[in-house]
Image (cartoon, rainbow over all chains, first blue to last red; front, side, top):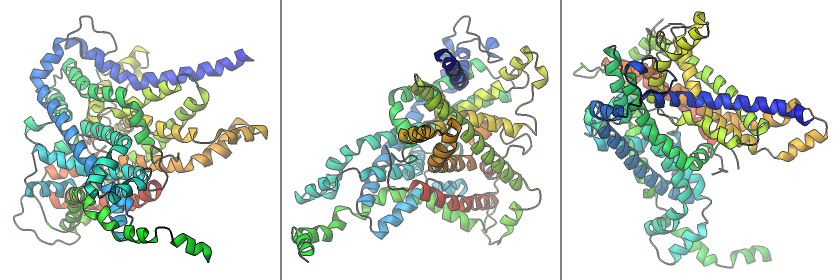
Length: 278
Length: 311
């Protein structure tokens, strides 16, 4: 009986392992090819590099102005996330606590933004008019505005789990609304704020379309746009150096994977919250 | 009577006071920063876009004129590339929704029912592609799918299946399906994670009761799992739809919308039109799309804005 049951279990593990290999294969290919010489990396094969070319990373740094792009991405990710999370928490708190008609309307307008697509044509115009186009502060504000709807949605639901008695006790003691929010509520919202922050950082880090529309000055480019242009200049000339492209791609995905290893729990819970009644 | 009086008595004055000053405790301006930014950079461009969709706005016009429905007529002109873009977007959306949901469900059942040990590890690994920036994914698959040097074709040739080797991204009939394949590879883990959470939320007693009553495994899937999972499928479908209708990055990097217009989608077409300076048509297309998404967003709100949320 046991032996008979062991066969389907083995097959299950084989299928699951197959799926895991398919999921990881492209990352593996990027890693091994980032350490090859240019001719060896032509086919982006699966073989291990014969003589690891650690110099590829220095080369791609100088050729693609990588450090600048990396710092830009980090700046956009952290500044936009901080702004979006803070403004969303403040809004979600007031809207969830006092559900008068006006607040409900604002809430629904805000979370409609989860589905509303950005009109890039007129947003470009608005950004030109406000002198935000092709500036770092501009792209940060755009990112924040696009992430606010989902953040408000997640935080709004969480506010209900914070006992109302806490803020009312603070008011009775004479604390101002802002002080109450900052000192009593914000610390208690930490789990959901952290979830929002991790998702926002990943979101900005991987975004491509906004810088494509709004950042023409290459010194403002984030990693995604920089790696795309580095890849594009080579491929249009017909001589993509896949070893260097792989090194560039690897440095683009590495932070994401590191964040995932550290914050996996929050990412998975954040992405499933709201989907499944717990 | 005594009950009513008893309820009103303790702290009735406090209650009134609390209610009276609630507006001061939770002022609307708390929402001002978030809403202001959102209004300026999301809602306002949307509203402006609808107005400008009826004008002759291009990069070269010096004065704006009302042109009525001319832009919209151009969108729906027979065989216009806007229609091709809408058709491609629709095919992409339907195909990715079906593929991602189907594969994700099979994997989710495998990782909850078929495998016990290491299941969280497998789940974590299969989710990884979802995290990767689409640009990076697109670049890597551009190489893997290259007709002459790509790993996929060279592997097929090594296995003496050279006949199955294709010009994956350059063939007019195949390119869209290659893009769909890559996008499914990337997105299936996310849907799987949600479905696993849904499957684990079904009380075990249901299955125990069913097996006591002599239900087969298939019958418990059919009569317990499927109905219990319906709300979860609704959510994953909405998530898939909202993403797929806006698809841009992966198409832009893999094919640039080509060959010809074979893989052009709504968002890549808007980008191309902006590049050509055809702002009026581009914003008309964008606005039409916004209306479609607004209708869909009512579904989003209905499905997602439910009271209970698990975190």
